[in-house]
Image (cartoon, rainbow, N blue to C red):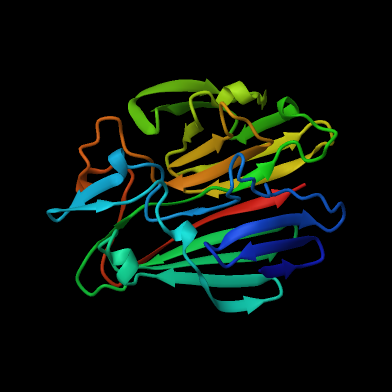
Length: 292
C-alpha cells in the first residue's frame, strides 16, 4: 500500500489496479472513500481501461478476429509499478504484455499520477502508444466511490448532489448495461437534488458533458461534509450507486468513453466513444477530488 500525505490530506493507493484505498482529511479523520464490501460492491475506485462500460456479449471484433473483454477492461485487475514517488506524489504504470495482447491487440503504456495539492487530490492519466506503426484504439475512465453517508449518524437520502455549471443536461439512458444515446432525456440540475436509492433503478445517471469542465459535489447534509469532483474535458460523467440491492456509497465517474450502444454491431472500429492515438503519440486526462 502506498501512502501520500501533506498537511491536510492522507491518501492510500493499492498497487493492484492503482486503485485508491483511502481518502482522509487530517482535521476530521473522516474516511471519504468507500471501503469496498463483497456483499455489495467489492471495488473502491477502479481505473477503466481500455474500455468504459460493457461490451455486447463481452466481446468485440477487430481485424477479422473476435476478442473477449469484461466490463470496464482489464487495467483494474492488473498490477501497476511505481516509477516515481515523493511524500505527496506517485506515478504508477502498466503496459501491454503477452496476456493483454490475447484480449486487446494493441501496444500501450498507461500511467496514473496521484498528487496532493493542498486540500485536493489531483489525478491524471497518461496514455502512450509505443507502437511504430499501429494506431491505439481505447477508452478510459475513473470510478471512485464515496461513503454516503459519511458517518453513522447519516442516512443515504440526505445526500445532496449539485453540479456546475448548474443547468439542464442531456442524460444518456441505459437499456440494461448498454447506452441509448439516440434517445436522451433532459435532466434539470439548476438546483441541487437530494438522492435516493430509487434514482439508480436504471443504473447510472449519465451526464453528457461534451468535453467541458464539469463539477459534481456530493454533500452529506447531516454533517455538512462531502466531496467535490472536478472533471476536465470529459465526454460523460456518471453518478452511480448500487440498485436494487443498496449500499451506502455514491460514485462520481469521469468517462472518456461509454458502454456499447444498444444497436452496436460489435466491431471495434464502429464503437462509440473510442479514442484513436497515433503511433508514438500520447494523450492526457485529468480530474480532482476535494474532500470537505
